Amino acid sequence: MKWQRTNGLFLLLLPAYAFLLLAGGSFILAFIESTGNGEGFTWSYYLSLFDRRELTDGLTYSIWITVSSTVVSLITGWLIVRSFYRLIDGNAKWLVWIPMLFPHFVWGYFVLLLLGQSGLISTALVQSGLLEDRTLFPVLVQDRSGIGIFITYVWKEIPFVILMLLPVYLQLPRQFREVNTVLGGGQRHWFKTVEWPWIKPVMFETGLIITAFIFTAYEVPGLLGVSYPQMTPVIAYDWFYSASGEERSMAFALLMLAAFILGACALTGFALMNKRRMLLSKSSHRY
Amino acid sequence: MTLPYLEVKNVSKQFDKAEIFKDLSFSLKKGEILSLAGPSGTGKSTLLRCLAGLDHFSNGEVLIEDTDLLAMQVKKRPVGMVFQQALLFPHLTLLENVAYGKKITHGKKEAYEMAHSYLKEVGLENHVKQYPHELSGGQQQRAALVRAMLLKPKLLLLDEPFSSLDPGLRKELREWVRSFLKKEEMTSIFVTHDKDEAMLLGDRTAVMAEGRLQQIGLPHELYHTPHNALVAELYSDVIVLDEARYCPAEKASWRAERKDGHEWFEAEWVNETYHFGRRLAHIRLISTGRRITIPAGESGKEASGYVTIPPEAIKYFKET
Image (cartoon, rainbow over all chains, first blue to last red; front, side):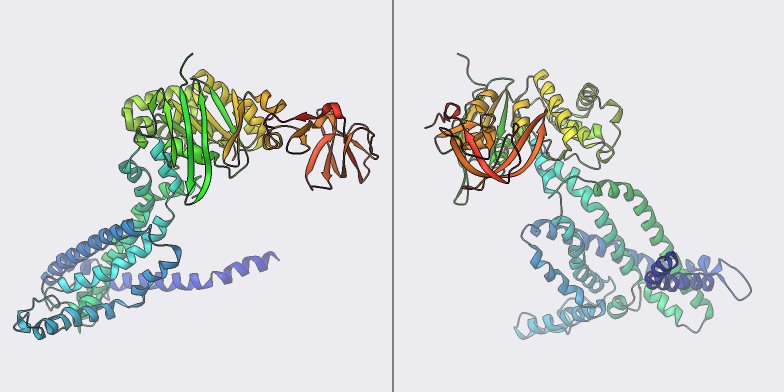
């Protein structure tokens, strides 16, 4: 019986183990690729990364797009949830799922069709006589400042932020609002003592997911970016498929570095928030 | 004659078209504790919530030290409230929780000093750095009471604060709460649906049912001379004979046969229990289906029989 119990548990966890093996294995192989030069171990690919001007420019560009898109998505999504969560009952939550059905690439293509110089909006403006020529329409996609990428990400991530925060807002402990009121507290105290502590872990997780995704995803900057500067995933992709074996190792080094930094942020954040999260789960409120 | 400290005049509450309570009036002296008893759903908690400002009266006036309480901004009202659950903020320590309200009004230093001194007084000084989940239910409820008291409210509202505690802790805590409130001279309204708790805690008791205060008075007055059938059934150990008459349950007896000259009800024996050495019979009246408890005496446990009442034990409700 004990054997059955132990092995039953093992079988149930098999998919999770397989996934961990796949992800962990890939991670180890990528690390080996990024530190091996055929003769032995080396950090040279990591050290030479920052000698490449295209990368330093691309890094600045990527960080700027990643941070701005993440911050704007988080704040906008948060404000939307905060303003409307009282109006959304349990049955309307499915509406938030609709934007989730479209992949990022489709969303990027949609932005291209809509906001490109020969896109739907410029065409409509020209046909209505409001614009003389399509070339007068501002360059919003495939531009050097990455506006198209920013718009795509913000547009796509706001619903994601809403999806993540909505359950937290719907389950905010309303009894504590009454406690706060009878103890002489106002909106500011409610926010500081209840609302923010409750949403902070989810805000952090959502921000981290969005950051990691934007910083490392290829398809949107691949579709809407320009040839220079390029976002780091596009650079990594080009290096990976370049004829030079050295660039392939550098692509691995670049992605390992990104994974390490984001992983460290995640671990630090979780470590800092775990105690608070555990305490919140012990709340005695009923609604 | 001194003016009442708290005066509630003809307050009513409606939700949409449903009337929760109507024209409630009562007054309290400084330091007096009023137990508000009654069945669930009669608006006792709503009354407290309206006084605290968490809800609104549809009509009426409330004066506290001759000042209009309802005209005051909710967070400025000198009213403290303790809820059914302790509702301590789970991520704040005991000290931070207790000092919470005082910190808002008087700053951190004063709040923490006062919280420390109160926590010492209630025997929680060794737990100041602990989080609520590390405290027992009784300790949490004590902390919730201290948190409300720290603001020195003029009126303290206690909304069934012991309902989430086990019976042993309940007994221990209610005695402690009464002595604490008396020591602080705190004018309080204590909501409960437990008859014993209402008697133990309140200087006076009000019975609220069917949207109005059925009777208000000293605990023994309500117990021995209920004004109507509702109060009798909720608060007293009597057998209600009809809308006008009742009989103390201790005067009734269980018999296999009717007794001449006695009022009788056909009934079924359900069970028996013992209380302070007395044998009590739990009986179901055939005509109404109501269950009553009467002294069983030396009678047998016949499945069916009669509850008999001597004519001299029958009393009349005051309202009739």
